[in-house]
Image 1 (cartoon, rainbow, N blue to C red):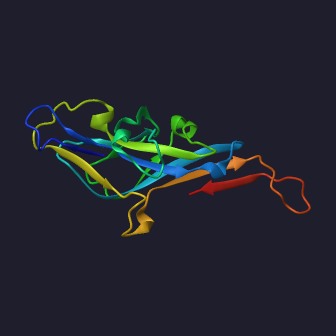
Image 2 (spheres, rainbow, N blue to C red):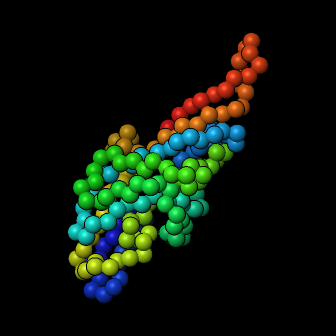
Image 3 (cartoon, rainbow, N blue to C red):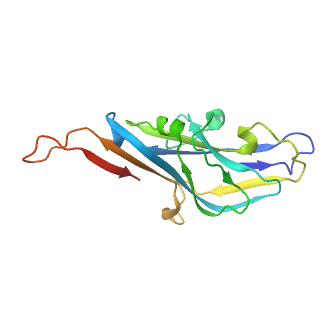
Length: 178
């Protein structure tokens, strides 16, 4: 998420949004999700006017690629009760999912997320003047320099689907999907 007012002497701003996706199909339709957290790695961030990163649902056309048409394919409901303060944000940050976030997980497919700045989500640039910036460089799934810094979703769930175990008719499974 990025906000840049440096190039505009009027009330215009550049707004950038981030998107990510996670294959959550292993949970299955019968799975019960009890917790989930999205982890992002921020390689650098700065702000001259505050601001935060906010997690919302994404509705991009694909979980593996983006087009310019995806810019508006973002939700307005926060999927985490935590906002990440941009100032000084570096390294791993986490968005523990709230009830809306847990409900947004697609148990049989791909879960789509978007990251918006608080200026964007709250639809407010009050007090922002020419030269102000707020940005965070979030590592993406395409980041090849250090693949350990790619975003990931950790999901805690249980499944009532019987497992095929020799000598037993069924068993409950509990797992963590990362």
